[in-house]
Length: 248
Image 1 (cartoon, rainbow, N blue to C red):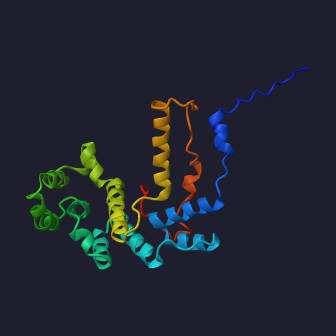
Image 2: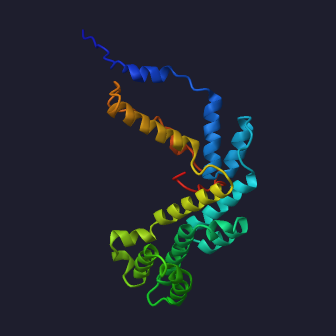
Image 3: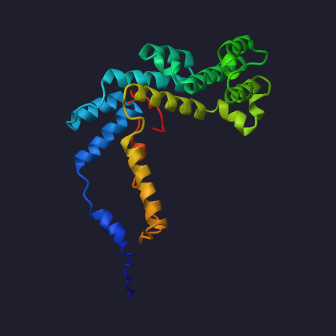
């Protein structure tokens, strides 16, 4: 006859204290609504605010406008995104030279992607766009000139043999980066927060842990989980909400 002894690792005192803290459901709901609003999920934000009996944090039309602009950028339709952005608030690009150049450079990347899709493609449109839209800006700022030169290299070398820094220009990551920059600029123009509250809390939590370990020498577990394993559940709702940015 054999017997088995259950060995359970005792919780660290800090972890036990964390488990003992009861976060009000209303606070969690507010964080969820804030994320859906700032990140740009209009349908989910509207439904969740109704189900949680919370006041919407922003007009639905404003969230939808941001979503459409981001969706256009993610598709690579930069011209449509710029048109709607200018309809929403033309001062956003007019007053932010860095953002304006980033958007125009992405538009050039998409033009190059299109005109080089087949051998012998006509690159005239890309050259004209670079000369008229980015050239004047690049001549006034060396940062822009370097970015423009790298982008124009895409016209010279085969896209399947580019060095990693150049290949990255054709990856979805550049669209996501520009989409996130545009989203934050719109929010700032509307006097809204640029970052989701949950992101700010995570950053504060990381800073607190670093401070506690390095300066106050607090007794903490070797590893403290953020408890965000379920974050992937925040997906588009029934195919109607297209995520605007993964960096919100």
